[in-house]
Length: 116
Image (tube, rainbow, N blue to C red):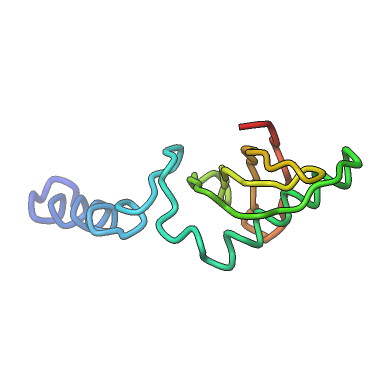
């Protein structure tokens, strides 16, 4: 059966066609950071607010999210978000970079929050 060239062609086509025409391949390759197209997306803002609230909770800081400036995503057993945030830190505007990992089950964890 595997010696039949037509069968072999069919088998290779069956496996490779979904990879060639996959939208996910075009949008975001696993491991590659891709710019967020719509920075005003409500889910992006939700991720940013999660990052700030987690940082406040752990560091007892006086922060308030002002705006999401930019960001990138990365496929990684869910989605990682690397966001540049404008934060009000006790009446002083500061830039921070936050990395949030949103797992496939919907849970989130703040992996990094540093001055940008």
